[in-house]
Image (cartoon, rainbow over all chains, first blue to last red; front, side, top):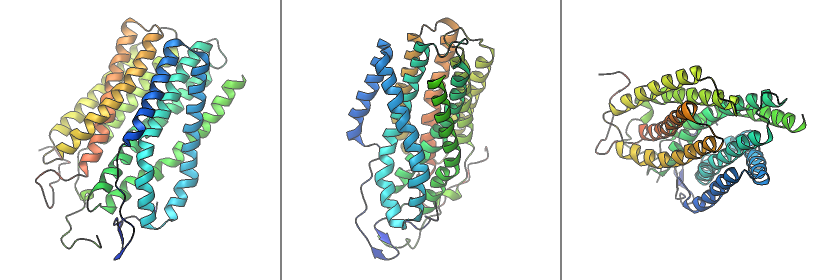
Length: 203
Length: 154
């Protein structure tokens, strides 16, 4: 991200621009969808239903990895080159969706994946996949700490800051810097996940 | 709206805080490490020495963070609790789901107790980090102008 210190919503310098979007930190319309997904994952685990567990793990994991890499490598650099007003407007519309989407995908992927590994015997010490799965736990652990301890708090704090009558551009810039600083680590971890999971699937 | 207000208050960045987010993130990292150790032994019974040790350290760090947070004055407590309670709801559901998976997989006795404590810490760590991060940049109710440095114990 470049300098966003002077973001003033509804204005660039002294020239008024489009009305500032109303920011809903958690998009309430998305909550029923999240509830359905969580219920489906719980039912899959409770029933030990192989197809559903595989579906949740593959779909959730594929989306998680793809979105992480796409946002980090494609959207992020483009966003950094936009005008301040465009960047602010994009962020105001984009980040609330990520507040719901990413934790749901992570929960779906990990819960179903662990159950799937147990069901298929991949966690057994005798399995050739055991070491790969432990490696994947470590990779996911690093990503979880970054996501939950660094990125999600920043994401929500940015949204609260943008709701203020006079958002502090310096605060937003400081918080957004976290995304840039962790993008490299997350990218490497996601590529490692792809390598590990394709190894597990083919051993 | 246009330009910067004439009498703009000092940026929230200028106020220093104790390392609450950092300590709580380390606490979170430790329960994640403990969780990985426990999960890597599934479906066998894991040795509990290291997981218990990291859980204890993690709990201590969480308590220190909670203590440091409770001493913050002035602080945007209304904003803190607004965010904390909703985040807590979300992460209790999340932790409950993980706990359900362990119970479903027949984890019982001491290992289940350790997992349960880890999940409680996890479900408190994340909301605390989120709520503190949001509230530190919010203005405390009834406060205007510059705010005191609260990074050192008084």
